[in-house]
Length: 191
Image (tube, helix red, strand yellow):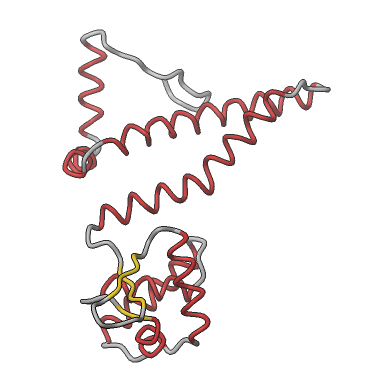
């Protein structure tokens, strides 16, 4: 790698984390480099800085474009493609969450709904459907919460996140005023 030590540490770590998040190490390192770069980079510069083959860089950039995590730019007088990440970290987070939702949550919801529409043929299938119904309820609740959070502007979202457990006090106060709307407790929840 042809990177300053601090940048190299970040790029290497991000590659390792990327492999845990479901992207390959190369893609994670390309993204990390673009994220900390002070200007858009072209594929040749990425290849030189990371020491990857040109084909690996091209494939990695295509994958990142498929995730909507990099932006293609053209510079005046230069025919090469340059790549950068959004400047706003919240735009990146929102994009990641939306893309993961499309790839992971939406298909799971579809499968669960399809399975639950089927007529069970045995007690074992009825039990399995009951469990899947609980899972569907939870995922739909989270999906609805995500839809609400997605509509918040960044300032409000940050304020909400900073509230943390203080939200519990608001909910307790609402319960005392009679505005409670507690979800039905699970078997493991203490009453």
